[in-house]
Image (cartoon, rainbow, N blue to C red; front, side, top):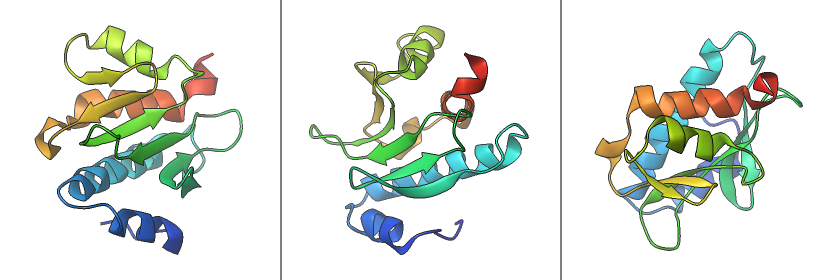
Length: 132
């Protein structure tokens, strides 16, 4: 596992019950790995936004990705609801995932994480402003 950049982020993950924590940690690794492999993304910074782990790029490169636990259970990856990230993803992969409006992909089990499909979502978010 990639070391945490921030103790507050580690504490946020520690507060999430299993098995949701394991799923969110797997998404975290996917975000950090994809971010490191994108030459157009100089860095991905880990922090907290609204009390949730968040992954940010330098201004005007990408859009913030957050990880959290929705009220209805499971775990989720969130994108800005002001963007087209989730709707573009839903259009590219219709019927594959549980989509919450234009803001989240919700998982009920860690086995639902697909590094290829969800990797495309993460790549889209991390390079969002470069695409527009």
